[in-house]
Image (cartoon, rainbow, N blue to C red; front, side):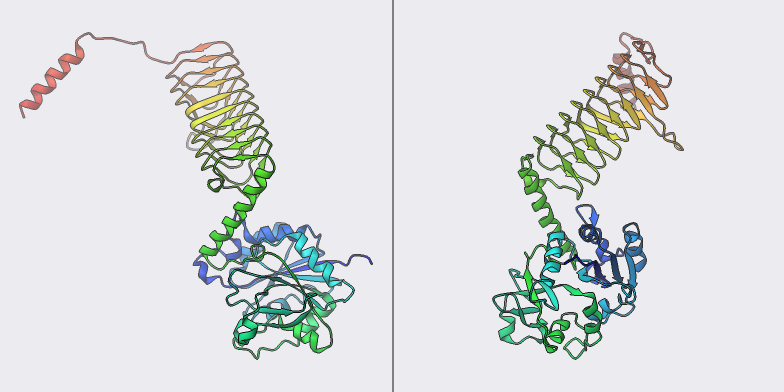
Length: 451
C-alpha cells in the first residue's frame, strides 16, 4: 500500500495565563528555540502535505514565528475545548485526503518516530478508527484515562472530571495526541457534544463515537517526558531540564567529556566534535559549532561561534555571534570576541575585546587590548596580520591595519596603519623629576594641617 499523505493540526489557542507573560505560551523557548518550532521541526521530518496551527489570543505572534515554516494559521476565536479547536481546521484541510496527526504546541518534545508509530498503527490489520498516544506519568493526577485491553485496543476513554473511582485508578493516561484518517476526523468531530462537567467539546470523545459505530480505536505508549506539557514557568524550567539531561547524555555518548554535566547548558543546535572537553558552568547559545579536541574552560559563554579543532577557550571567555577561532587558537581569561576571526594558532590570553576584527595566524594579542570598532555611528574593522604582536593595554582605533609581523608597543593608541615588520610606538617620552613626589607630599600635608 502506498503511504498516504500526512497533515498535522497543532493546537495553540490556549490563553497561557499561568505563564504571566506578554509572549504567547508556545513561543517560550527550550534550549534557545520556541517550543512550537521544536514541534514543527519534528513534524517536518514527516514531510507533511499540510500543517495547520490553531491559534486564539496573540495569534499575530504565532503567525510571525511559523511563517518561515509554511504552516497555515487557523483562528479559534472562542475556546470551547479541544474538539472545537480541531474542527476549526476543517476548511484548511478541505482538499486534503490522507492521515491527520493532532498535536499540541505546548507539548514540544514529541519525536518524529513517535508520530510515525501512530500513523503506522492506524494502518495495522485491525484498522483502528483513532490512534491515541498514551503515557504513564509518576502522578496520573487529573489526566484523562485510557482503559485498554492487553493488545492496546481501547475499551473506554474518559476525562478525569467524569471518571469513576475505578477509572481514576487506571495509570494509562491520554496525552491528547491522536492520529485519525482525514475522511473520518471531521465527521466524528461534528457529532461531539458538550454534555460534560466542563461544558466543552472534548477531542477524545471521537474514540467512543467511533466505538458506537462499531469501530475500535487503539492506544500506543511513550514516555512521560516526551508528552510533557508546559503551562507555567515552573513546568517550562522542568522540561528545559529534561531536554538538557538528554542532550548531555548524548554528548558524552558521542565522545565529549563533561566535567560537571549538570552545569553545562546546550542550545538546540549545538554541534560538538569528538574529544571535546567542557569544564563546569559553560553555556552555549544558538548557532555554535565546536571542532574536535577543543577545550572549553569553566564559566565561558558561546553563541553563534565556530571553534576549530584544537582551540582552547576560557575560563571566563565570551564568544559572541560571528566569532571564528582557527585551529589551535587560544582565547583566555575575560576575553570577548564578536564578529571576528582568529587565525590558526593566534592567541588572546587575557582581558581583551576583539570586535569586528581579523587576526592572522600566529598573532599574539596582549592583555588589555581593545579594537575600537564603533565610532558612535558606524562599525569599522581592524585587520591584524599573521605573526603580529600587539603589546598589552593597546587600543586599535578602527578602521586600521597592522601588517604581518609588525609589533605594536604596549600602551599604544594606534590610529594609522602599521606596516609589515614595523614597530609602532605611541607614547610620550618619559620625563623624571627627582624629588618631586616628596615635595608634593610635604606641600599637601601642610595644606591639610592648615585647615
